[in-house]
Image (tube, rainbow, N blue to C red; front, side):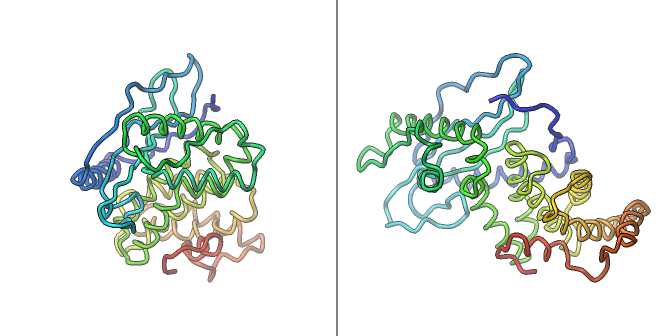
Length: 320
């Protein structure tokens, strides 16, 4: 599916230290997971690149791992099945390929049950949109053969490709839950425990993923971006990438017209104002924006914090 060019390059907004920290965190998690690996299936070939001049959103499952019950699942929680059983975890790679492969692919790990929940939710709400989708059925035996894993991986790729070509499916809460649900719940739990340094990489990965699929000013993208800014700035010492994410959020909020999302703008400006003060940056422009909004009768002082405003729109587990 060809995508419009001009999407802002998120990766270029982060400095190398922040990117390296994210990569090291991801590597550490993968090394811990690989310690329990029993078997690995790998895709024999990569999906083909698009025609010259096109930018295509691509879902690819490059590998799948067979893990024993009790190892960490994609949400960081132990699997609650009987001891001794195994399950397959699929690595879903999301890319925007052009003349060459996307240099910044984003990945999430999902089980068959995640795909099944997504399929059943969409089929219940929009059955007509799934008439051409062949979803792999459950099987009682042979779940871990390379042939079955390969067939399922191909079917899951086609399923995700179909979803993003149908706006009503792409914008459904079921798809958003599939893309970010486990990681967002885990990140919010970490924020509740004041472990922001562990929550930020999860939120960064979620944001990169959503930003490849949805428009820059989509509600889900801006909401997650603001949650990321809040996570970076609520610790006594701001996260190293706090300024980069805050600057991106400010740019994204230019010309936003969604009334529901605008309730986050004042808290975002206040958060950035405090961050600029901590870093010794010039605050004139932010102060002028707040002053202009105050002259329009908008309350700019004594309102909710950014975290509180986010929680009002999308209640989660984190303490506000």
